[in-house]
Structures are given as structure tokens and as C-alpha cells.
Figure 1 (tube, helix red, strand yellow):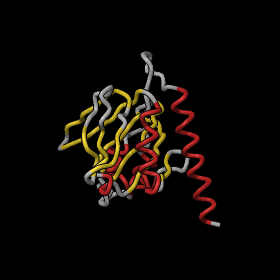
Figure 2 (spheres, one colour; figure 1 turned 60 degrees about the vertical axis):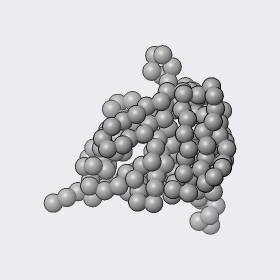
Figure 3 (spheres, one colour; figure 1 turned 135 degrees about the horizontal axis):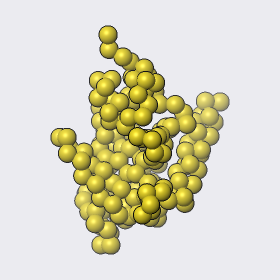
Length: 171
């Protein structure tokens, strides 16, 4: 008998969201839906444009793009950009990451802070309308692999603000 996404999370919490989704045979967004509150929350899509403008001020992070089983990592500041021709165009000449994000294809954004293989991990995960991951941005680490405390503080503050907003919307 197949396990539900919640059962898979409960039994294999040390795995990545992608590994949990594979084990539960569901989308990564479905896994995020059942993660404990302290591990994940959703950023309203109305905040997407703001987030794109804000991320370059966070400092060095790791952007991950997974395609057909391959994983591409770019360790750098998230680049500045601006909307144009239906895309958010990444145009920062100081960054190694360039390209064009189709923001209309981003259906949801999760803020995830959960242990991963025994180490605390923080990321923004961007999903399409099928619950598949478009890309992820992990908070940066120093040379000793310690999370950058100012980024963790900003991330936690953003999560708290989202929790308060959700609570206000429920009342």
C-alpha cells in the first residue's frame, strides 16, 4: 500500500522535498503542503515581484535548477532584473546568473526551512501550476558551511510575517 505524502514526511523527514515527493509519488508542492508549519509557509503570489526586487540585496545564495535529472547550481548573488516582454529579465552584469524568468508560470512560492541530511537548510522554492519546481534559491553559507546569519534572520522574519498575514486572513 502506498504511503500518503504526510506519512512519507513523517517517516522520512531527513530527505529533501524532491526525494519525499518521489517516494510519495506526488508533486513537490504536495509535499510542502503537508510539511509542519515550522518548516514551510507560502508566500502570496502578489509578493512575487517584490521578492524578485528584494533577493539581490540578500547577498550570496545558491540558485538550483533541476532539469531531466540534472542539477545546475549557481552560487552568487541573485541578480537584479526588471520586467519586460512578458519576462523578468535578469540583467545584473556583476552576477553569473543571467536569463529570463516567465513570472506568469510561477503559481506558488514556498519558504522552506527544514533539516536536510542533518543540516538546517533554508530555501525559496518556486512552483508551476502542476506543483513542479521551476527553481529553488538556497540561503548562502560561509566557507565553513555555516548559514549566513543575516540571511536566516531575514528569512525567519519573512516567514513570521506570512504566518501573521495568514492568521489575519483567517479571522
